[in-house]
Amino acid sequence: MQPVSKLPSVGTTIFSVMSRLAAQNEAINLSQGFPNYSSDRHLIDLVTHHMQAGHNQYAPMPGLPLLRQRIADKLQRSHGITVDPDEEINVTAGATQAIFTALSVLIHAGDEVITFEPAYDAYRPAIELFGGTPVIYQLEGPDFTIDWQKVGKLITPQTRLIIVNTPHNPTGTILTARDMEALQGIVAGSDIWVLSDEVYEHLIYDAATHESILRYPELRERGIATYSFGKTFHNTGWKIGYVVGPPAFLAEFRKVHQYNVFAVNTPMQYALADYLADADTYEGLPAFYQRKRDFFTNLMAQTSLKPVPCRGTYFQCFEYGHLSDESDMDFASRLTKEYGVAAIPVSAFNASGRDDKLIRLCFAKTEEVLEEAGKRLGRL
Ligand code: PMP
Ligand code: GLN
Image (tube, rainbow, N blue to C red):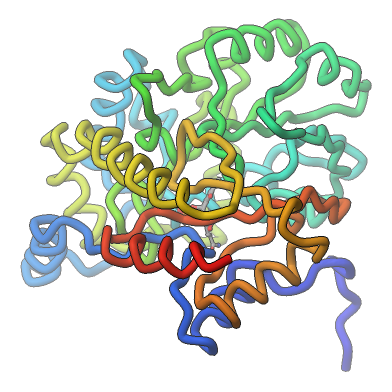
């Protein structure tokens, strides 16, 4: 038997492909985005503590009330936003699930969804699964900024949703207050929703402020923001995140969530609730990651790859077109096999397969690993 594919043009995600290639070649894996260092020992101890204390049965469907309260406190402290933890927050099995479920709620057959590419590769298949049509705005180097007038021209009566991502994977750009105001101007008074993927909210550099969609009143009433504790607390394998949105949206979100995930694992929710009580656990992150970015940028300056400036996330893109005519997939494979460093070919994040001869490297690694990767890439 062969199921009729709902995603005939989708293969295996580039993250699995490149991480497998890295393992096969014993290469340094700077492809898939995850740290090679551990979460805070205290957070791990808290999980153990809560398991031992017997917090091992189903959590409430929307998430542990104390964790939702702490998330609301964090939103207040970080962004000055007052959010109702009961009606506007839901704990999810990572940001990817939050996004998938949000799209299942919002997209009806025939709806158009504006996305900016290159983009995290989970958006497009989900849009298509729910019968939507992705409408692509192509971001272009060297600065990958958005011309909002051009975005405005993509809007039709079928437009149901715009997906933004700031700080942006893979380009490392961030949206500014002017971007958010322009976006607000475009959607105000319409029936268009905005999903803002903010998983890298704390990975933002050079004293820039993270512009959350939730800070803008006209965006807030139609805005859904998604977050990932995996990104924030160096434990991507825990797959815990949350979604924030207006009460009417959350009510629909929960209708799907209750029959899909129901609840996210309990001891980690208790542990995260305790851990979040101390704001130092996340307020030091921009400085921590800026040191890494600077360390990595300095190392890479010794190589012949041309950097795209990174203002946020733990990714940096590099151009190699002056070194080779190979496709970015071929170049990334050769880097892995011959130089022992795995990268993501950025064309994997373009629906069209557009190849700007860019690779993405993840610098969420210890200095020794980054140093060794820099040395290997120096031979290019
Ligand atoms: N959004 C973006 C932009 C990402 O890069 C990632 C990758 N982790 C996610 C969402 C997914 O986060 P999670 O691992 O919590 O599902
Ligand atoms: N978001 C991570 C990245 O961009 C990986 C997520 C995943 O492996 N699904 O590398």
